[in-house]
Amino acid sequence: MKVTFLGTGTSQGIPVIGSEHPVCSSENPKDKRLRVSILIEWDDYTYVVDCGPDFRYQMLRSKCTKIDGIIFTHEHSDHVAGLDDIRPFVYRQGDMPIYAHKRVLEAIRTRFAYVFDDNKYPGVPSVKQIEISNEPFYLNELKVIPININHNLVQVFGFRFNDFVYITDAKTVSNDELGKLKDVKVLVINALREKPHHSHFNLEEALNFIAKVQPEKAYLTHISHLLGFHDEVQQKLPENVYLAYDNLEITFKK
Ligand SMILES: [Zn+2]
Ligand SMILES: [Zn+2]
Image (cartoon, rainbow, N blue to C red; front, side, top):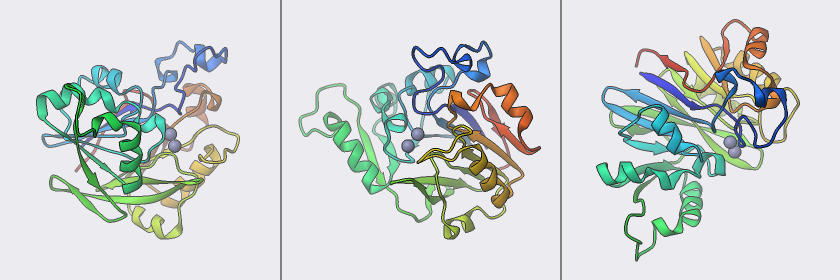
């Protein structure tokens, strides 16, 4: 199984437009972050988690030419705004399966009303909606376990694919849901910045969460420029914790 970090930045990405913050003018490619998304591949299958405003460029950059489906964590713009750019995949493959909570599918239908119009304009994208709840579901033969996450007022799904867990936009996770993370080997978790935030883990909260879950390795994502330079932050992290960066690939046993 291979995971590619297509984007690791918070909602505005890094650099932020017009920002004079030193991280936003860093020359280090690891300090340039598109909006969060991952590509997850096993056997001949390729799925994407979230489809934010950078989706088109992320597909070009990762040379991805086929997607078997898109799984959504929640309906915020930085996670859904790129949906129109699935068109090249739809023309080649047919309707794109999209997996999401009922509420997220509703939000997508509102935001992209033209995709669901009875009288569709020729060429608009087409999707196959697959509603998921807090119950395991299958992507081809692979079992996926949703994990219910609180993002302040918004419910978010994290996902467990065997020993790999991807969670973004978490602020709290209930103890019941924590049970689903037992024996996880690789954990991806959001860490926005050092200062607390009303709807995202800051670095300290993310590290506390990692200490509770005890994965073999953890990667931090959904990062703001305010967290600091990649290389400096990485030096301060515990031994098994890594700051993810765009284009980072990790492989592990399925
Ligand atoms: Zn987000
Ligand atoms: Zn969000």
